[in-house]
Structures are given as C-alpha cells and as structure tokens.
Image (cartoon, rainbow, N blue to C red; front, side, top):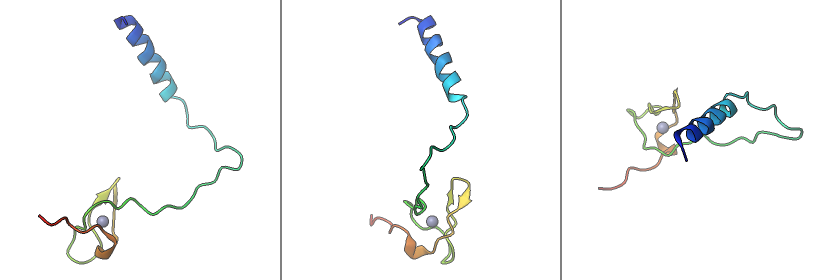
Length: 70
Ligand SMILES: [Zn+2]
C-alpha cells in the first residue's frame, strides 16, 4: 500500500466522519441506563466529587465500587 493509497483512505474516512448523525429510525427508542460508575468514591462523605465526562458523579458513597484491598 502506497502513501497515496493511505491518504486516499484517510480522506474518505474523514469525509464519512464529517457526516451528520443520522436521524433516528422509525420505532427506535432510547432505553434508560444507570450512569457508568466504575470508579471508587471520592469525597468527604457527601456526594461523590469524581468528574465523569464533564459532570460530577454526585452519587452517595454506597453506590460505588469498594476500593481494592492492597
Ligand atoms: Zn462517583
């Protein structure tokens, strides 16, 4: 594969990635899921202070994984 081939493939991929997100299909529904909480509680006993994807987790300590014993 030449560098021209690679550039061509990358250019096509970039064009695909630049496409807008397709509209939902008929009958498509979202399902509620618990937030991802695979982290150990951080905080002082109040709401968790861990930042997840730009938002504070804010769940109580007992909704978290326990720290692994050393
Ligand atoms: Zn948390």
